Image 1: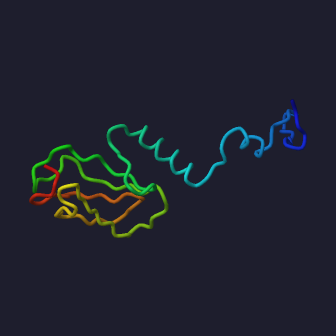
Image 2: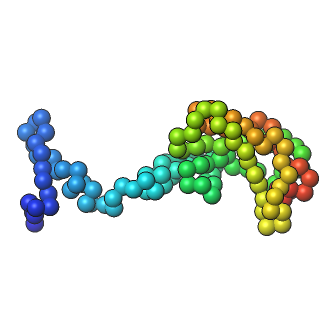
Image 3: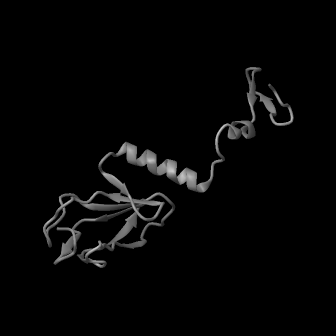
Length: 133
């Protein structure tokens, strides 16, 4: 069934008719900013399995932390925070951590500068009883 009031078409350079964008959007849910962000995150996580994890902010992902790590030891890889939105170079990024037992972990070297949408923490350390161990 073809409803001309709902579907308008255009002719491409080959003489074939192509459905309009409003018709294509009708086939699935409308593309909202939230849906676009979710698709971007899912694609990014699929491209880097086991390396990145979602955060509480929908536009930020970070590297995965080891499940158990001794206090005051350097992490095996640099901890990175990746911004999916537009964050200017030079923006100061501070990481905070906590869990059910300790709502505010003591961290060392927990500040980095954003460059090309990535803040890299070269020597992030959990100090004392931070809840990571």
